[in-house]
Length: 289
Image (cartoon, rainbow, N blue to C red; front, side):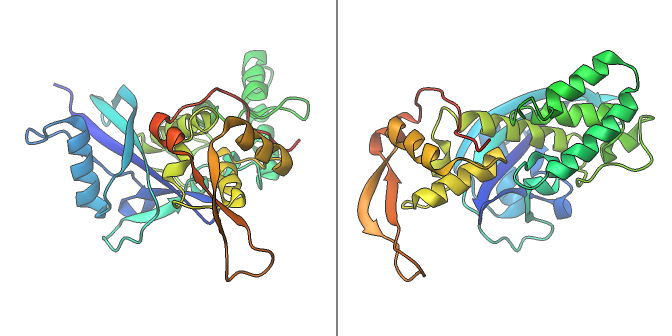
């Protein structure tokens, strides 16, 4: 009988950096098997996260179920969950918050275009004259004429794995001599993290989930920086503010920042109706071109 493993991707955004809570000094996500004493899958997950990190879970949703042959030929079922939180210090041994760009540096297109170009060069060498492979490279990593699709995190990682360019590929005969930058993870945990990144990047376009990552009151700049951190792309400031206003997501609190250099900034909060419904019409983020 296949063992069921519960895995948590717990995300926070701190100082403009998306962070993920890890165990084993960054090599794994909080996880553990479903046990007879767990009254539900979520209860089991919460128990493992608190046991391994001493960090409670707030908002949570099921991410994906993986049923792959792994770990010495055994078939395991991995049920993953996405949780959003505010970062809090943890002194539990081996539990640390790390930037998700520590694992996927090419996904931060605010700073990584040179790295992206280097990846394309290595992938093209791997593709050689295979037109199908070359088309996949263009579709996933883009060209100067083709936009980067920030949601294709998992597909890009799997292509790099297929090309033998990530450390996890060293567990097979596909390994390249020198892997691309990016910290490896145990088992299939980096694949699960990639899935969570893609899910969250898609959700911020049609659900105001970022309120789980922000304080009760925030400036529009803090909201924009949080969205940019998750998307890994720079947003056009005036268009972003019109985007937020058009969706009627936030309202002024009547207060402003104080004790900071420069002009005080207005403080906002999410509207009560938004917090209740957590949904609005789909749209595209106003990216800087």
